[in-house]
Image (tube, rainbow, N blue to C red):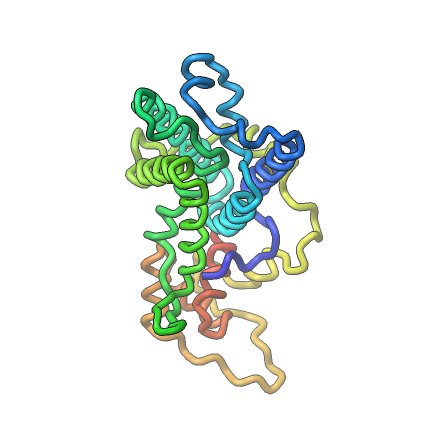
Length: 293
């Protein structure tokens, strides 16, 4: 599935805020040559109790390759904010970041008497690798191909980017990545009913006001993608081209079933596939955008 049917950060203000914070802090600390000192360590966090280091380590990457792959994955995973809404995605982000940070600190405490590791890599590993849980479970493979005899799918590039980030600093990045996967799994299991929680409306309004792209910044506004399709009624798609173009074939039942397995209504899936001319990637994006309104 492609990163999104709407360009930029339309309907994803929380993701935009995280990307901006991560990019700016990474550049600032790198310019001051303090990036390497950002990672969580037992000495700084537990013994010296410098809690400000936790905030800095949550957002700022320590190297340019980590920054590139990290921001790419954050940008791609904005599809989940569009799917569940910015409020719930804010809860997901806070939960995965907080739980991952606590698990990282716990790992430092457990490993303090060993020579295994002294400090961990910094960056939003909790949010990134927590997002791989719904990516693995909810996003279907829609196409497969072979390169030099090796099988790949349309999801492979995301997995490869995640693997690169996970192993970018070896043990220093491996532990934060694993902690992020655990945090994402706990959210998926609805620990403490976390998936039903929402932030106060004032916080959601803050992100919508200050981090949503300005009107007209996208060349393809979200409502133009949805058009006259209703995700709840199953009405016929309107405004079909009539200037000699061939009629759209009835969507395959397998494509409809795949969209239904992602949680979409069968009638809405059929309408989206017809509008997308049976392109399941485009249809998925149409449904996600319709669901966000």
